[in-house]
Image 1 (tube, rainbow, N blue to C red):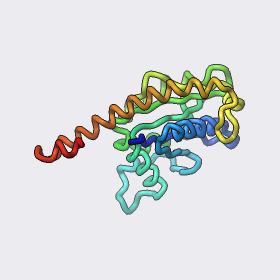
Image 2: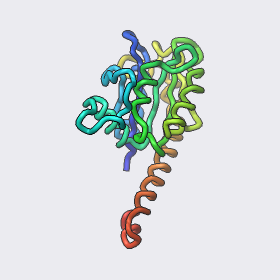
Image 3: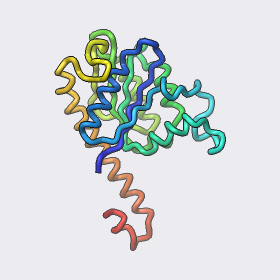
Image 4: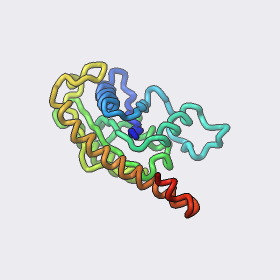
Length: 204
């Protein structure tokens, strides 16, 4: 069974270049038979955090917030695509992430960082690992850094530099290992809740 992955990208800039990196990851996951959803802060336009999604009643929750919650809840794991702003993550990305909680639990995340300069946004990586761990989606050991993002991909997310097509293979191999392992564990945990006579059938 293929994995279900949510690619989470947050940037409020008008001429944002990181969307190219997000599209690249979406494309590469789809090539590996993932079911992929791109959660883009510009598309969903969530308000600055006041109430988390879990604090709304079903009737009062903003529809776009509900839509994001459903995508995250259905996902087996997440790929987070982040710029580096002043050694940390963009406010739009942090705001998007912080609206949700239970949707992330016991699922892995993988981090893509980018910048206009040569270091690929890796200083944001340190902050992002701590944020994701606190949310309950621990990040995999490897990361995928993109330098000079404005010339790394075309507008459709195709790599201009062939090295990105090669490098992403190991990165996604590792992400898939964790996503599959944790999905199996979540499934086994759910089966343990069934009556003893039905547990074997639940595990297939």
